[in-house]
Length: 245
Picture: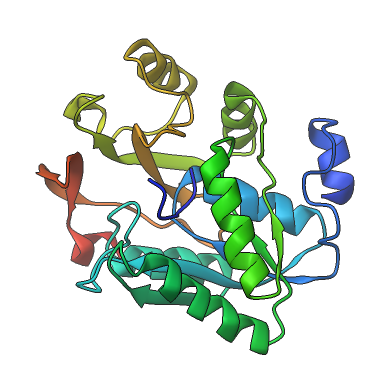
């Protein structure tokens, strides 16, 4: 599940034989809506494989400006991911009420800098698709959802087969137990999440991850934490940012 307020080419053909989910991206400059999680990374990777030119990662922050709005990641960790990808990070602090207006403002700025398209990691929540298309349209950008309506287990399999490593950093306290926190994503963990009633990819917000290593990362982004806490209806890790970065 990608960040949002409502909650390629030859490589593509060689890996899964799926239809192109990113038509028209080849050679075009794009931003990726960045949560730091697995779906955002996979959407980004597919956009790059399709020939897109990454120009920015857009990550909205909590109004305190210290952590990401969607996944609650310390800014330092998101900055480290962007550095590992070699792509500029664009952040803005915002409330949920002002999220859309703030996001659109960022997109207008990127459009003026020559960005032509937006990439989002949503899978099948129609409200998210409509929102993403709407904000891109206002900013005169094309909108691309490379994961749209694909099978959850196939997406997880693709990630893990590529060597992507991701850790569970938050869970919906009403749906999942805090014991899932801090565990690395594996087929066995996905099976446990499904047995507990969660969507395999957490598309309904059941759980959130942070990517710590991936083929497009120049270096791993390690995690360290010293406990867990309940915040805004979620169990989350208490990060030791100084040790993690």
